[in-house]
Amino acid sequence: MTSSTELADGSTVRNPYTPNNTIPLADMDKVALKIQDMIPKPRGTRAADAINNYEVPAYDNYRHTTIPSIKLDHNLSSAIRLSGYYAENRAFSPQVNDYQTPFTNSVIQDSVSRTVRVNYDQTVTPTMLLHLGAGLVHTTLPNLTPDFDQSSLGWAGNFAASRLFPYSSLGADASRGGFGPYIMGIFNPYAYIKDIKPTSNASLTWVKGNHTVKGGGEMIFEGFPTLTLSRANGNYTYGAQQTSDPWELGKGTNAFTGFGYASFLLGRSVSLNHGTGSSNRLGNHSLGLYIQDTWKVTRKFTLDYGLRYDYVTLLTEQYGRMQDAAFNLPNPVAGNRLGTVIYEATCGCSFNHNYPFAFGPRLGAAYQINNKTVFRAGVGVAYGTAPNQAGLSANVGDFYTVNPIGYGEAATILQDGNPYAKGNRFGNPEIHWPDFNPNYPSQTAPGVRPPQSPFIAVDRNSGRPPRILQWSVGVQRELGSNLVVEAAYVGNRGVWWTSPLLFTQAYNALTPEGLKANYNIDTSVAGDRALLTFDPGRRLLPRARGVKRAGIAPWAR
Image (tube, rainbow, N blue to C red; front, side):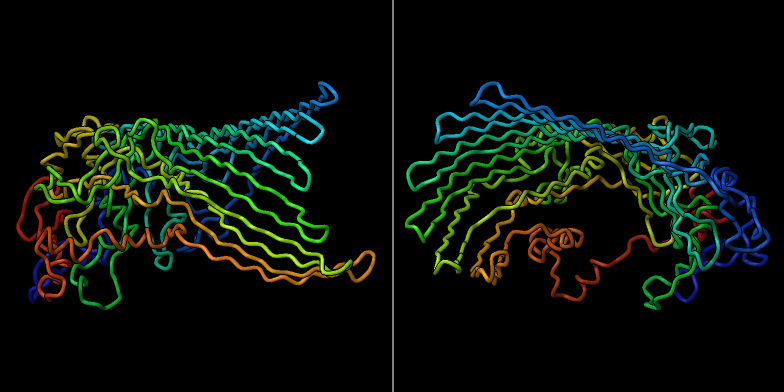
């Protein structure tokens, strides 16, 4: 931990606190100290130890699950049968973890899922059978911690959702001591998230001579209405950099200084996410149609052939209120450089292209070589489901991400409050949802970089479902009256699979061609490559609060 910043041999360095590299109580953030007072005190036989000195007492917890169900069948006539089914799965648990303090991230489990199903079967003729089915699955899952009045922390300004404790990730190094667990509050709180899924299917089977023909279809409509307070309680992250020696930047020593918990005590966050949450309606649907024929060509040879069609859609917001990154459009609040946020509600566009040509032919054959041996073979094309990114519910709401302006600097000062919350003292506009025309403030808290916009990048081709080619060849042989042996070769090959790891790499967010065309940056030139890694924050900043002094870090004494 250091108390001041200065230049030495062209590098920025920080000097340790004195005496004994100890932060004076007067320099500690008053809100951080209030939060620290909520932490349970050392207890048990280890109370006198310097580390691991909290002995968890015994506590009671339980999980209560009820799963009632009922099934009814009724023959309306000799040719018509009606059946119904209802089931409920309800789970409740207080989720006690012995940290039932205001900063707990323990969420009471109180979920319920209900399933209703109705089936109608009719023998239309002695050789024709009709089946109709419909159902509904309804699930509700809340995800909230106990209410907390954020104004009791005594900082300047409140968050939009002051009913919850602000999320804090301390990032402390356990080998250096500190309090664990290192997470306070909840990251993505939901007042509720629901899964409402109506389904239906129909089929008609017809036996005609040596043919058994079956055709039908199925539909699934799935919706995720969600009331989320994601990031509305304020998401703070604390790391070692904010109490580190800036000299280490770029030195390649694979070592670091600083301590995340010390950064927390000084109130120096490494990042802040803030939003208002949202009440959104995400959903998708799928349609499947098929027809097939089982043809008994001869007494020993049977041929199966058919065709299936699938149409699936990607998850989207019903009213077009989910944002997407448009890398090819100018951003008016960033000097019209390419890269902005768009919404389906206002752009007159669709974020993805659902694939309309998912046809899957199938072919199979069986031949009886003798009365104990059968040869079987088959090949077919199948399509998987589109990526169902239900986790997008937490990200539909607009939010700001505030990062430090340079290595080791603070994104925000905890006791100053949120620079973008309602009634903030910096004069910044309050964020709201939906924000179709974001107008990011020209000023921020002193020494704080302007907030970044949320970026959800939807691949325009991600609506194409995976295609799988499957085939098999095998022989069955009866060895005895109750014994059959089978040998088969089964293979499959797929394309267009979902690749979540490639998404996390964002490997195609910027291309060398785009850098050259839009910014005149040539990655084959060493100087241009150095520009891409240049840190504009490697400069000394004025103090975040109060007096400005040259050569003093924003959080210096």
